[in-house]
Amino acid sequence: AQSVTQLDSQVPVFEEAPVELRCNYSSSVSVYLFWYVQYPNQGLQLLLKYLSGSTLVKGINGFEAEFNKSQTSFHLRKPSVHISDTAEYFCAVSGRTGANNLFFGTGTRLTVIP
Amino acid sequence: GAVVSQHPSRVICKSGTSVKIECRSLDFQATTMFWYRQFPKKSLMLMATSNEGSKATYEQGVEKDKFLINHASLTLSTLTVTSAHPEDSSFYICSAAREGAYNSPLHFGNGTRLTVT
Image 1 (cartoon, each protein chain N blue to C red):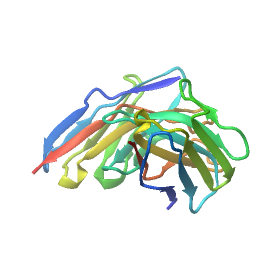
Image 2: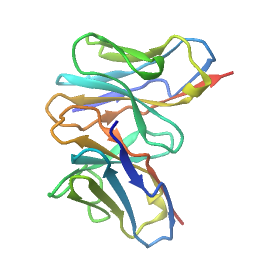
Image 3: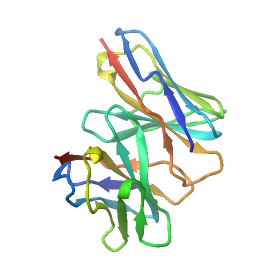
Image 4: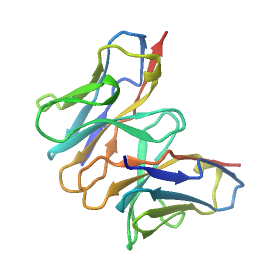
């Protein structure tokens, strides 16, 4: 089975400052990794994914994440945040066994301060 | 892009009544759909996996007689909360996987806010 840990439940950051949202995973098998964003009362929107290949993955809205197998991490970064980035961010993992079942972390609330 | 439509977005019902939530994949066929429940300030908890034409697979601790799932076609899955109680109040989100697209990102509906009074 897989599990995901997002240690930071809330991250406040000033507008135009950089941000890193941390994600660590645990799995006995090779995994795929995802970051999703959720705006209030809405579903989840995919930001980026790591399936294979380059460990640095670029996504939408200027976000990127780096897969680090030795540290079992997949931290999300953005060099300069905007007010509109205020939302809940979820890291998720799925096993590479053919199932689409995603295991989610508990989420990180990013609040961008003007 | 792929779109998953979830309806209704909000529903308020009285204790003891049943509520049906629909999840539709609008521009692709979804062999598998997933139903999640999200508690305040918590992550999404997978409730069940719905496969077209077969019985749903429920996660441990989820009452299958209370949360009825039907996946009658490749574009529609429904979740019925039977005899709802206030503790069933939550945000329910569905997701769908494209037919044959294993390990591709899931497409999510916008969720349904259920309030049981």
